[in-house]
Image 1: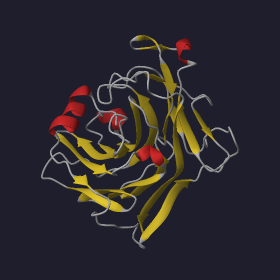
Image 2: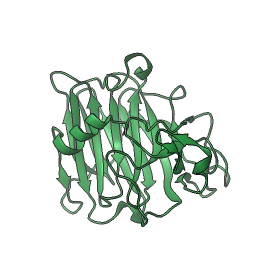
Image 3: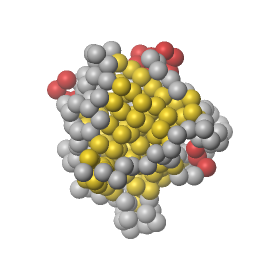
Length: 273
């Protein structure tokens, strides 16, 4: 998700592998019986309560995050909260943005970016989330993971696993990607209708020699370990965020609805039993 402009261009225009899948014809799979749940958040807190501080931290600020994004990430309940109905809400707004300064001047949007860095990480396994994404030009929701060594080696040497990305101008498409040094691959799943119409389950099954991406149990992209550039062999932490604008999705326009809401029913992580 947090690609540099160059990496985004590589992913979107010249990725090493792209697959398009049709749900009617795709193979179906569920989490193997051998998986064992190691970590989860079911978001069963009370209405308007903060996400569980024992599980989630926040990234904050309006630096553009390497992608010329327009949002200012906050830790405010205006932008992230539990709804009392079993969901995490990540909400992008316009009405409270002017109090913040972004890389381009006075901010136009606020949103939230949650991460488990320092609280949970894992090497290999199944990373899964049930998410209802927002629609609209310029919105960019994601469920992804970064290597815990990012502070010492930087990006992309730490590695990045994008279990789900969607951009509003492509409402029917979800992307699953891997990013590492000299290694950028993506696969694309075509739902045939807008993802914003309901909850969908996004998963990455991560093994020492490959990563498989699925939507609602349909595996659409498997990336096998190449001879070089593979950095997916150490712990990764999780991220959930809703970016607005940037080098890939483009900016919102007058048709984009705000507040834009990303709803997360659960996040679950498994390992081999």
